[in-house]
Length: 382
Image (cartoon, rainbow, N blue to C red; front, side, top):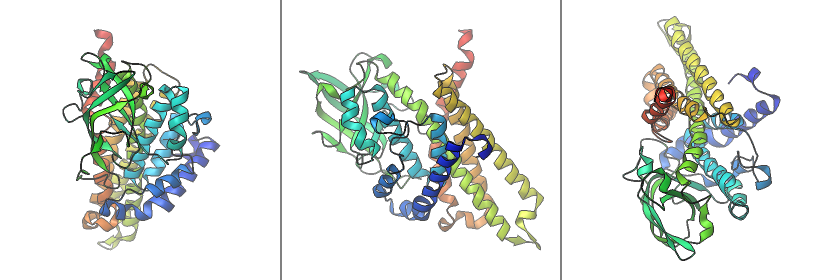
């Protein structure tokens, strides 16, 4: 990221977060990936820097940072481990939703522990039969006296099982988006269970499991916001979540580019450093240029979201699509520049490639991002 475009506070934020990533994430990332270890203790250290409540208002225990600040944070974190940075982005999306849509009692109950990461959070929208068409979800909450009874299965839930707090979207009304409401579910609520940890291509340093809800009885105060507004709230949360994942792609890709520069400077072939070969320099130049363009688009979208621009969802979708495609492409080219060494686990490049691949799928697939962008372009034509 270009320091001349940052304020002094933002530059200090980047430096602090980069130091944390290099001290506490990068040295362990390969081991966590190999062992499928979720480093909850390290997440709580991150919370000591305010990274458990990045967007939560200060009066609720958070940092009250802007989205423009947040994308700097998550890019910096991902330079150490995209998997852990990605989970932190999701945790912060949930914490923001509770802060933004919750009542005073809900904020007081949930946010102090979420901001301290004494409780971890998960976002539960996707279902086995409802992925891209999220408005077709079938999990249902029916009235049970003054409260609700919740039944359904949520799929691909990051942090599931380790997290204590789950924001769950469930149907309380008719078909379509208007029949969906949001609820805060606790891991210890009777009827909450989890599927096995999924075996995945990447993101192995965090668990991904089903959340199974079998007749979970919730008091009335677990409804987040108003009945029937859950889908709108879920999409609002995803606008910020998409920026977080886009920024994580930038951080992982930037790390792979930096590693490539070091590798090419150290290697010789045909009597010269690989770094002095013009063809390879051109590849590096393209990678750096594409990352700079993606970073600019992510920053533009973040600023639009901060100021409440009506075009923000369109720009967030555009930024997510471009940054995650670019990040994966840059990491893949970095692997190629490492030759056979790039394919070895110990060099770390193949892990970045695996981690960044899922960014093109989660928080809305990039095909759905194209749908959102196309809709924004053509809606004036009916």
